[in-house]
Image 1 (cartoon, each protein chain N blue to C red):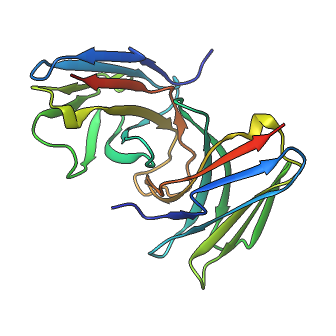
Image 2 (spheres, chains in turn purple, brown; image 1 turned 60 degrees about the vertical axis):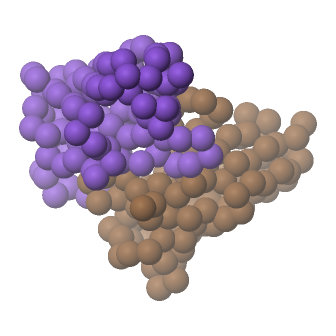
Image 3 (cartoon, each protein chain N blue to C red; image 1 turned 135 degrees about the vertical axis):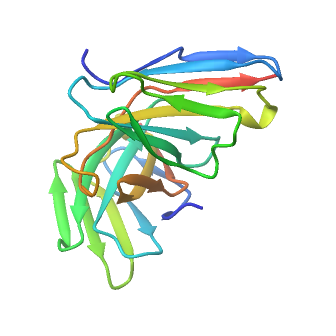
Length: 118
Length: 108
């Protein structure tokens, strides 16, 4: 399967612990996005990368959140000192875009990582 | 804040019937996309319609776009049990801005 993969699929942690999620995009895709989805809502944008550069971060991404894409391939999203409000599905997507202003690229989503903070 | 808003929030239909859902958005767009999400899973891209298009078809799906009303609709014809899912519209500005979705249940 050459789609977007995410690991782990489920994570249960205690409040205050740190967690890290991984996303492997489709291999030739240069853009990688992170979204968060809570129950009954649509996904909300968190951040995105063009190759290894992080180009935008949403105001939803507090300083407890950090994302990296060190070699322009896989990405990690770390949440430090987790809170119960961080419980959500974390979705990763990737796309192939020709320029920073390309507005028509299709994003392909992974299966998500469901985080539960106790 | 989310850009799109889908209507209705939930829809229950009999297998074989058509399902129609609407999406309204707030700002000018270059294109609008529809996605499907099966329970607890990732999103699957269904169709993209550009701002200069009024209607687009893909299999049993038909999407319309009215930029003057800032609205779009998704029609699923001859629904099947496998169409049971949540459907989201998303406006595109390199990132996707989703509404809360329409949950469709197709009864056998």
